[in-house]
Amino acid sequence: MAENKWLPRWFYQLASPRWCYDITGKLLPIFVILTLLTLVTGTVWALAFAPADYQQGNSFRIIYIHVPASILAQSCYMLMALAGAIGLIWKMKVADMVAKSCAPIGASLAILSLVTGAIWGKPTWGSWWVWDARLTSMLILLFLYLGVIALNSAIESERTAAQSTAVLALVGLVNIPIIKYSVDWWNTLHQPATFTLTERPAMPAEMWVPLLVMVIGFYCFFAVVMMLRLRNEIIQRERRSRWVRTLITG
Amino acid sequence: MSDSMPNRPAGDVMNTECRVDGPFWGALKRELLLSYRRKSDLVNPLIFFLMVATLFPLGVSPDPAFLADVAPGVVWVAALLATLLSMDSLFRSDFEDGTLEQILLSPQPLYLVVLAKVLAHWMLTGLPLTLLAPLLGVMLFLPSDGMWGLMLSLLLGTPTLSLVGAIGAALTVGLRKGGVLISLLVLPLYIPVLIFGSAAVQGAVTGLPLGGYLALLGAMLSFGLVMAPLAIGAALRISVSG
Image 1: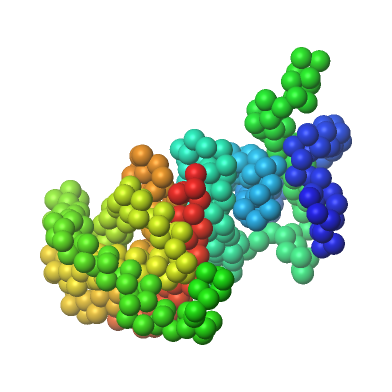
Image 2: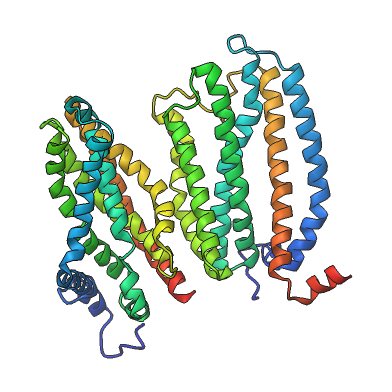
């Protein structure tokens, strides 16, 4: 490939499945340790040491799973669309594989977010589900993930499947700002975002610091699952190449 | 591009796009003519629209007060499903007889041809649905104040439905069983149109100002008109080459 002065060298190196397999193999243990550290610290801190809410009591503690899962479900969609765009523009196989690996993880996180929200909603709002803007747009996000998975599995050719799902993911990107700002645009039951870049959180530090630890832990966990799926995908697609054969037969 | 047409000055290409025999009008004329020759296909979505609306009084409750409440949503859902149902055939026959491949290979801008096809689709489904909607409104006891809201919201909303649906149709055109899949892909993207469309009718019924909802529907339509043909074109290229 010709040298390009706009993009760094590692960007092109990532395009090689073998190089990507090697580098994720080296990064994986680091992220596993980080995930264990942050998730264990965050969970113990959140469940045992953070103070109970003065109105909701202990039931508020579910936000330590709900908020990270919701944030990550949206980030995962953006990563999927970004990887899809890279795959469409630079025709990188690895980007296609990243996009494909994102969809099931994102769908699981969206389900986790909806289920934890429902469990929390029952004692607090008095019902499992309300047709509120935030909840509905999260449900649409789940539907978008399911559409992407369905389209990907319906097309047999790997290349065509990757390109088609990339187009669909990019079209569905329209929904992301709607989810993000639904709590600001409409007067809804759901409270506004917990974390913003510009302001301090409304809750006391003893509550939001463990939440931040959990969010970081979820991101690390996502990285671990992502890398595992990606490595699987690489091995499966490159099974006919020599380096995979020597890797397996030793 | 200029090498293949040495006799023409560059400005001429722009002119042909605006003429009646340019790619846009040519494609539009072809679509309308083809549909006119198979008239039964034109009526099917309308019959479906009527039938779905009939199911609600029979299935839920024939009480006029209840029906008047749900009428905006029911008419909108029925219009949405009728559009969705007609979507699958948008590129299908062109794909099967190889016309689509020729369109993609031709030097004419794909954007205009795709836009013409979607416009033709809307003229043959969305527009008749809009015109038929007051009949359904009467059947479902929609207050007469809501009729204008219903027609205006459908007039602005159904083109968006056609544009978004065409993306799904283009993505699934190469597949044998595209029918269910296209609904899975397109329905989540239809939800915002449905929300603002039925809210506009609801507003008209209760006498609230409609401007905001109609402006949002118009904004979605303008955005769709600019962006959707690009996505449809990209999807068609992927589907045909795959």
